Image (cartoon, rainbow, N blue to C red; front, side, top):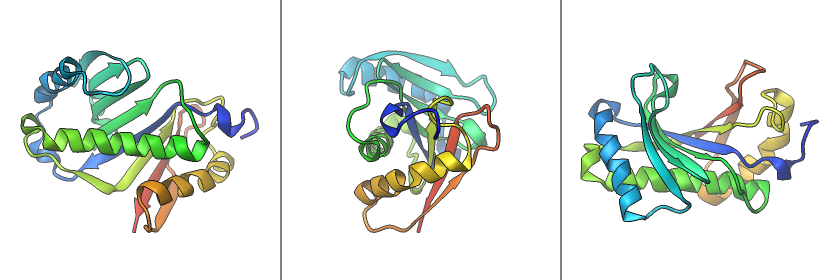
Length: 184
């Protein structure tokens, strides 16, 4: 990571994949997310809900927030719940990775508990991590090697006692650093 220090990395996202994607009805998530805004049960400042379900393998239904976005995401052709931190990260890099994973866990649990979600369940054994800051975290092996200790330490906090395989997914140097974590 030649262009930045670990303290500069804030825009960390985490995605959990649906274990039973066939039950997802994307149109049900627009009112579900609007309900989250109306009940004011979210951390941060929610702004609006955006429906991108017309975009193949796209962001799906997004709950846009000032500090972070949440989404029923269809990226990679695999539906899942996504949490993307956008600003104002605090703590060490390890704590920021742990916070992103804990936030996606909360979003997944909230969706799973909502009857409007149709009984969807999210797998906690595979996590996609994405750093949406190409300047501070280039999509290369050197950056992953530099971040691996913080990711492993974060997993020790949020997935205590689990072995993890941590691998870079991104091959496009112009894309964001994307990391797949598989827990054993």
